[in-house]
Image (tube, rainbow, N blue to C red; front, side, top):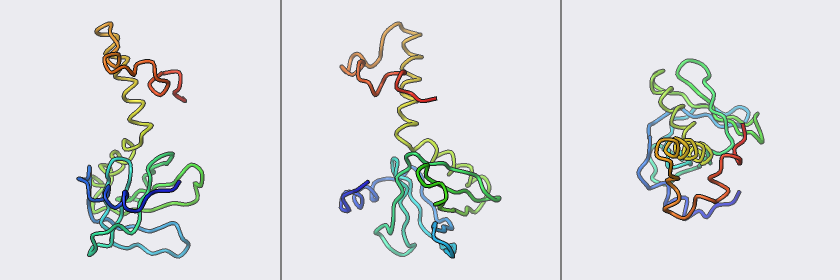
Length: 149
């Protein structure tokens, strides 16, 4: 997928859902752990050199797996290339769990599933479709039938 560099840089400056200095090791063989400022903004995970304002990279958190590794560490891999893993080391197990939870909830697909779930719950309670007032209740992306198990 291609992105506009200026738009990504602007997005990286937005308030982060989470941000911290973590140890990070890229997917290349022989890669070593380096301290990086890591910022979660919407469904992008930006990483920066600790002394620079511009990101050196970004991961789009779609179709990915977040896996707990050794104590205080986790990895992110992508479904199209599961061998390509990014490893992160946290200061504590608590911080590790917080990051993993936030990353798992950052994808568009997770947000879509949550919207559909709560839409159905509200509809059961009130008998009305809460999306109807916005004129989007019939759009395919908001239908339960579009979900994959």
